[in-house]
Length: 378
Image 1: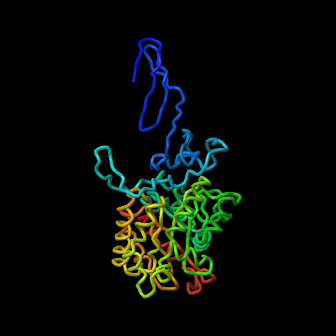
Image 2: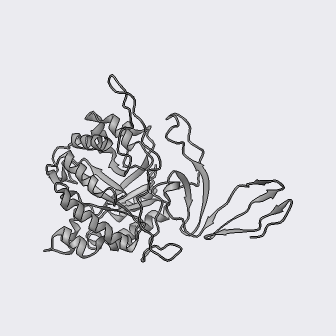
Image 3: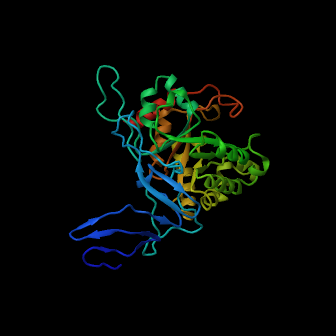
């Protein structure tokens, strides 16, 4: 770096592949607009709300940000160029070897903070709450239909304070959340659906690839969920979207008949294989949630396998109010979260109902989700 006296230029500042120029005047230092060029954009919790215009090999980062949580809901957002793309889950590096720091030591995983805290709800009843409502230490995936069930069941306040947040991925749309500020998501159960998601209008910011042992996922994808997830990541990246890969445990029965699904998932290192190619994955552990100890052991083991390959991979775990129609309690779900929240990035909260996707799920149980969120808020 070269510094000249008087009116002068700093020639070049090189930081990790980035270049920038500053102009200096006598007695003062005036910062000119900064243009940053990176070979690869890595996720950073500090820029969750920044609008990214990403290219597979380079990116130009603007400094425009969304209003903070203190801003009035009706306040206009900062103008974002038409070329800006998903703010989403900032892409973590997909690597086949552990990430290391400057000294060569492996960098430990730290759970990124929320980009901003949940909003304080309006007063309800005779007195206003003294603190913000809703779990603030985790990130969520939830379907818009599930949110509608929560709101219809009287959980509008807790749903809004928890999920009206730009780090929440909401799958689908609902008039009830039109004014919310969230990460627009879409679920794809096959690679053709992934292609459709990237061209839909309005286009989602995040796609959740959900292959399962059902008629909605082609057999070829069921037999190679890791390879299909790698392809889905490529489709999403080309469209400047984020991907969350969520292969279901029941695929293990297709791949390894005769083995218990949880045993096969761990013994065949499915989490590690996925982490080699995707930046975010979801562990569908909800079938174990009625036993918090079993749930915690499975999730923690899967997380360890994934982070042994890619320490920066973002990992969600599955929760359900009635998995396959089984009875669970809000207290059991609360214990599941308490036992695993330090290891995972967040949770996919399901409120399923009987239908073609889950014939045995029966009647949805939004009350359990409301109780869970209320307990986490306390």
